[in-house]
Length: 116
Image (cartoon, rainbow, N blue to C red):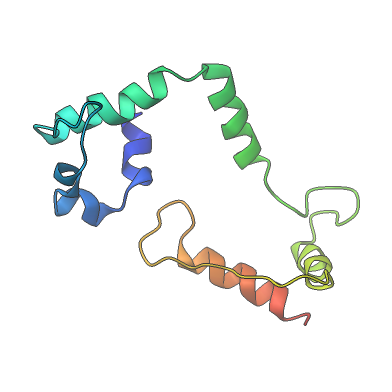
């Protein structure tokens, strides 16, 4: 939970102590950053089934859209396949996201739009 806490909110969230604006169950404010980590993040994860969390991690690790017999690890071919879908697409590139950095979004968007 502690490691996840560093990704779940931006660095500025902690630097600016924005956790102080959040409330515990019952509307009581968090007294300290430690209180926030224990009663928000740890409380959140401790009520989860650890097998579900492991499955989520496995899904993220295996999330290469080109790792299959159709594209054979050729990411550019997988991106080209996405580009032929007859649907609108929106790729969000947040400035401070530690999960999905904008540099990764730029690479993906470039790969997909190259085929439009």
